[in-house]
Length: 393
Image (tube, rainbow, N blue to C red; front, side, top):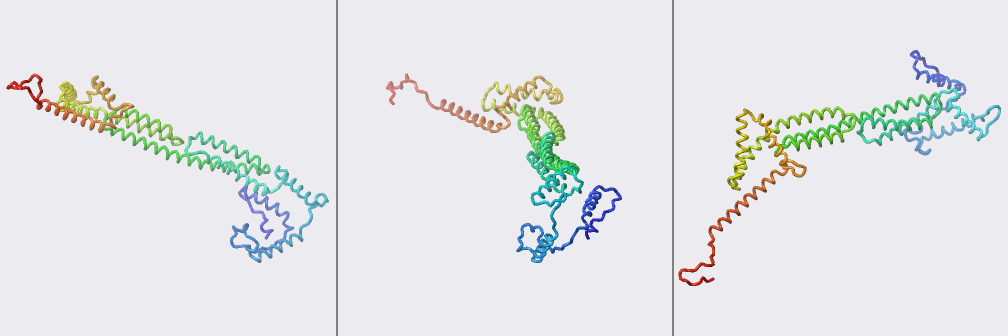
């Protein structure tokens, strides 16, 4: 069985991995003549727990055969002789140290199986160091920051490998394997960063889109309020959207904001014109029936006539928007409707209710006072009755 396992495998395609295995076979074949077979039964059905099991839990036949194997090995073991001298325990340990040092320096031709096993463990530990350093990075981040974290973690992993690796030739191969594994882990982090970046930027984009839709539906249109919301939305997107997906979402963001601005400007003048017509008629009613202030009523009528006659004379309301008078009206409207201190669109309904209550209250109290003055008699101290008698209490 040993001879059959150590026979070379044909390698017509020149596969390097088959060549490496054949080298191992050739090295082991040298010791093939000095081999002894000894069969052992299976120690336990649960193979994954063999290291934790005690002899009492193992198969009794296996324990018995294992003891026989120990006796066989003890009978076959011969002292180590180097240069005609038998080595004792300490000398044998020192000899093994010299052999390992020579193997690590690549000075002894070997199959490299032992070195590869050691380097494989070191490779796994170095890869774990790289992964731990990359896990500190909170995704999403910009491509430059991810590349910087990758470079630092890769340098630390390589330095640790250089300090702990064995041999020269096989260490170089293990170094290439480490580099390949690091690239795989970095690619996975790159994909995760793209996903997190797309998720975050999509959320910010949707938030800004909802904000723009809300500004389109203002009850009292205000260009200043729209520009302030436009600026805040753009700034928050620039600050919070990070990662590789930012570029594509910036393009979408700019198109959406430009479309929203164009739509708002187109609807702004029409809404403002309608509100001014309603406002002028409301002031006419207030000035005539509630406040009874002739100047207020006349000013409201002048505004209403100007708005209606101008659009009739010049065919459409669009021509009004280029008139200097309209620009002055727009400036006054913007100053009233929106300011950093008071947003009239938010407080319009409470203010109207309060003013209406005050107007009705003032109207009722004023009317009651006039009625009282007209009904109650006025006392005159010089008044005398027709009879000439003094007035009594």
